[in-house]
Amino acid sequence: MIYKMLKSGRQEGFEKGEKMPISSIGAALGIICIVAGVVATSATNSPIPALVASAIGIYLMFAIRVADQWEKVAVLRLGRYVGLRGPGMFHIIPIVDSLSRFVDQRVRVASVTAESALTRDTVPVNVDAIVFWVVWNAEKSILEVEDFIGAITLSAQTALRESIGRHHLAQMITERETLGHELQRILDEKTNPWGITVQSVEIRDVKIPHELEDAMSRQAQAERERQARIILGQAETEIADNFSKAALTYQDNPVALHLRAMNMLYEAIKEKGAMVIVPSSAVETMGLGGMLATAAIGGNRPQV
Image 1: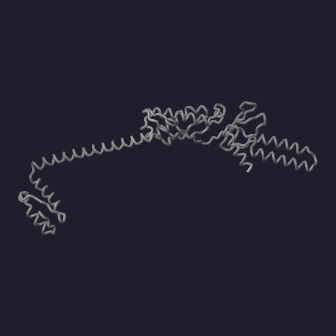
Image 2 (image 1 turned 90 degrees about the vertical axis):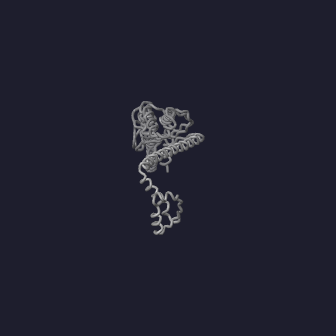
Image 3 (image 1 turned 90 degrees about the horizontal axis):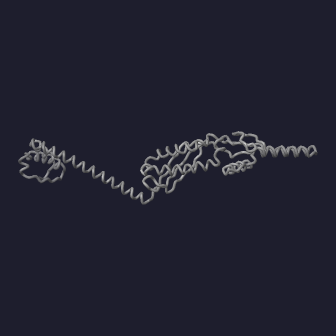
């Protein structure tokens, strides 16, 4: 329980830039030394073991520090940088040495939002993005930037607004990956001197005004209707061209025309109960008497 309290207190404090004076292992060693001194004093009836053990225990409380596997911390001796420590347990000189904030070197995520930013075609949009970044040089991030977490967030917001202003709305909606690569390049150029690398930027959402959404929906619907009419007109043109070619063929070949007429008539009367009205001249011209008699014998009794 004590370890968890010290651990959570250290993490919350260092996120705010504060310094935790005692580590859990240092506190445990200090308590062990004090208890051992008390036991030795009770056994020897002399206060010297308790005083010595208490002094050693207090020293260990403030001298022993621990950094996790993914952490680095800078040691300052009388205000001068002497090196990085961690991961694991390390020793400092109390009062003389001081520690910077613990730097987490894992991949971290920052959420960035740009509200009411204008695109190149003057459309107000709200854009949400996620920045994945990592500290690759803890020494630079500690010594050269006061608050690199805040610097990353503010730089990402500025770069996001600049990138929005250079792109049209259609590009932002359809080319999110390209926009993310551009933001990653801009941010990496800014943060690389700080010992920080921006690995990727992902555009999570692009929101536009509701009125503009309705207008874009109507525009898309009108565009689809226009394409449908164009396709229908092209089909009508092709059909007319084919009819024109067929007319030329039938004009020079009356037998083909008669065969086509007979086929059309057959298609019309092959259904049961169908009624087809054909002029008598057409029956005599195409010789349909025999065909109609054959159809009647077959069970299909058309009415002509």
